[in-house]
Each structure stands twice: as C-alpha cells, then as structure tokens.
Image (cartoon, rainbow, N blue to C red; front, top):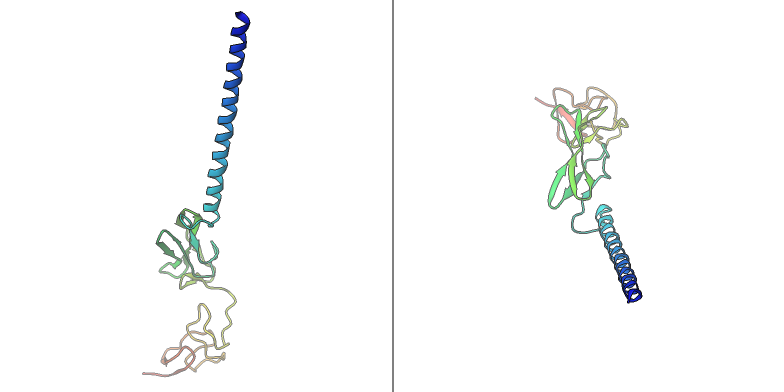
Amino acid sequence: MAAKMVSAVKNTKQRSSASIVAASLAAIAVIVWIISIDNHLLTGNAVVGSCFDSDSEEDFYIKGYAEYRSKKLEDTCSRDGIRLQQAYCKSSVKVTMTQSFQCPYGCADGACIALERNCGNGIVDYGEQCDDGNQADGDGCARSCVKEAGFTCKTVSVCAPGS
C-alpha cells in the first residue's frame, strides 16, 4: 500500500512539473508575440499607432512635420529668427518637440539657414530676400541678396526704383 502511495505522489509531481513546463512555454510564446507586435509599432510598420516624420527625425535644415493620430506638429522658427523648434517622432507612439535648437545662421520658414547660400545665382536661397543673378549694389537687390531701400521688387529678381 505504501508503494502505491509513493507511486501516486511521484505521478502527481510529474504531472505538476509537466503542467508548469507547459504553462511556461505558453507564457514565453505570448511574450514573443507581444514583442513582435511592439517591434512592428516601433519601426512604423503598423498602420495603427505609428508616427510619421517628414524630414528624417532631427534634420534642422529641412522644414518638416511629425504626425501621430491626426495631431500634426510642424517645425517652426522663434520670433527672433534664431531658434528652431523641431517636431519629431520620439517613438512610434508619441509626437514631441525637441528642445529648441539655436541655428548658427538663423532660422527661416521652419528650418535653419544653411551656410551654403549662393547669392547672385538668380535663385532665392534660405536667408535671401532677393537674388537678381548678379552681385551689384544699386539695382534693388544688394550684393548680399537683401532688398535695397527705395526699390520695389515685382518679383524676387526684378527690382526697380519705387516711390
């Protein structure tokens, strides 16, 4: 009789151990599944819960925006034209603003002004008010690509004496 009881206790322990192993494997499978779903959200592969950043996270020289669940935040310049507030996706589930970034050459239209201005090429670059294709003063658009006083510019490259 004692042998039967010992055998029954051993069988119960074996079944109990098997149940623990099965429950542990099921828990591990659930954890792997949750991590898999979370990774899709973090990489932006999921449609629901993803955040979109139009200018590659923290690109201070391109105006962009970050959007999550219809909440759209755009890059903006401070009133003094020196600092940039850069919108970006901190994670796939949160849109935030970085701390303001001080642009070395100023800020215009939601982006830092790049040093590579090419005044006199006929194209208005960041930080230029006009560009008439030359670097002559006295024609309404100064050699520094700033509108000159006393001139009216009908386009960014054609200025004439005004009243």
